[in-house]
Every structure is written in C-alpha cells, then in structure tokens.
Image 1 (cartoon, helix red, strand yellow):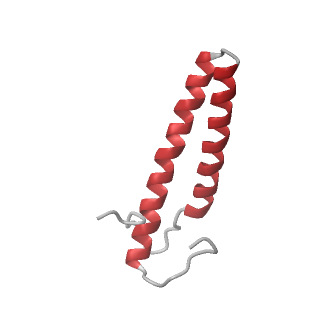
Image 2: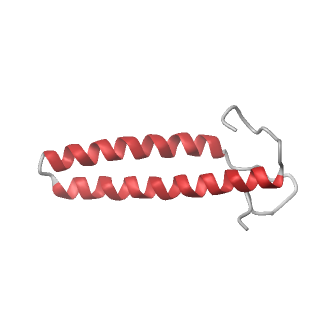
Length: 84
C-alpha cells in the first residue's frame, strides 16, 4: 500500500500535491507540443529531448495520483483543496 506522505515528524509539512499536479500537466502539454513542432521542423534531437521530458511528466502524474489516492484512503471524506 502506498502512503500519501512518508512519516517523519509530527509537524512536517506535506507536499503540495495539487500544485505538482498542475505543473506536471503544464509540462506534459508544453513538452508534447514542443516535441511535435521539433519533429515537424526536422530538429530530431530537440524532439527526442522534449518527448523524454513529456514522459517524465507522465510518470510524475502517476506518482501524484497514487499519493492523492493514498491520502483519500487514510482520511476518507477529508477535502484538502478545491480539486479533491
């Protein structure tokens, strides 16, 4: 079972999962657009770099969603933001 946050100290701040979600979505969209434009302009190396960065954004989105789901399992019914 994945925990939403690692247990460290009692007063430790949690990460801003919703901000990470928005930033990862922005990165995914922009890097996908840039990769398509780079491949269309025959700048293959730049297209590959942008495609790799888009894949990193997808992995980050998966991690964020797993942590959000774990937070919901740990605290059912709690609303942590407007997005949840």
